Image (cartoon, one colour):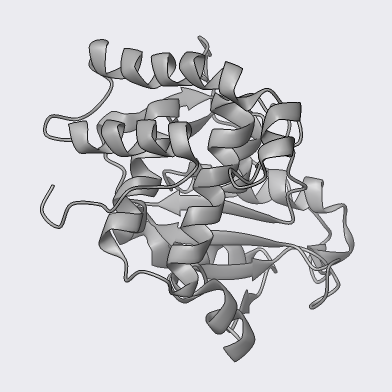
Length: 266
């Protein structure tokens, strides 16, 4: 399964300003601000990779995207952040609350505001993360249209392959201390993906301990097909060499709803 299609990048054009000089872009439609920001980042040579909620929406998870997360090469994080700040999208300092709740997803990211509201549910951001945080390699990336909308300003973006999304989450779980905020978020996101994407459960996660709900959703009938999909990825060479343990862990999660203990030295 692939997100990609054949695309041709248009010739570079000079980008006009989103708003008149001296005015803040934060009063504009967030989608318009996001589109302009992405095109500007690409214009200055930043290699953007779609991440987290944007990816999960591609994989059937019905998320409302509040913050737009992107991976950036480690040596381009400062450039990307300063470019957004120069556009009038301020860098927000991490709060103690966010650090406690989101762990490394707050500590490792750079949060740039794209709305007039600075707090609460209506505040939206572009989140920039160093690529190394995701454990993804260049070989695991593809080219696709952005998932937020199709735009002539930024018609293509890098995305991880479907298999790599799962592999990345399990690698990150393997690398982080268990039961902390980061670990809990990774577990949650992985379970949602398995429920919506592999098991095709319209209502998402079903507690394996709830036998009646498990039966009502016919989960047992969906598991063999989901296991076949994961195993076919191995047969087609989708996993990296030496990462068969990731496939085994994912199969166990599909079958039981629980991720098995991960090896200390994969």
